[in-house]
Length: 200
Ligand code: 5GP
Image (cartoon, rainbow, N blue to C red; front, side):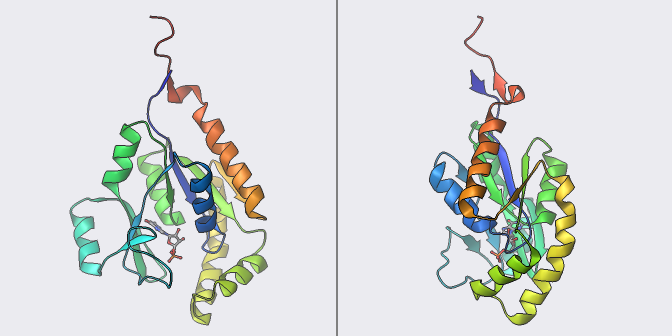
């Protein structure tokens, strides 16, 4: 039995829901999962690395990538541009390998239009209060930016019904367990298989 195509897993949700941490841990537990490194015009935060967290590019380069159709999707998130380079994702899928994207909701909705076969997972914090605590504790955003992120989060939460799965990130362990279960179940769908080697 062979896979017809890899899974495109889209992890999304409001900023501060913990999708970055979940994605990192998931990749440690499922090392066979490919990961798409996004391009961004935002400056690197302390501890972030070129090619690991993002490819950091300027606005002109970003706009050139859009014009050359090199991005699968892109969005402006909190005054910066973020985008998913197309090549790596399509190559992975063609080779039957699964790949995960961790992107914002606009980007996820964009991908859903082009690729409805994707697996769309919405990560939510246990409460808005908890979201505020997490963003504040992270210490990387100004008070103004935190306010903006929280007011966006309330609107973003209403997109939940557009997704295939919703996972409440109450504890990382619980959330990872559920994410793994989703991926394992999705790999078992008959539409993803060709029954080669069975009845020739
Ligand atoms: P941060 O600046 O905190 O790393 O990311 C801000 C937001 O941008 C997060 O919600 C993150 O998921 C999202 N993001 C990261 N990469 C991409 C991308 O390639 N496309 C889109 N649409 N959003 C992204």
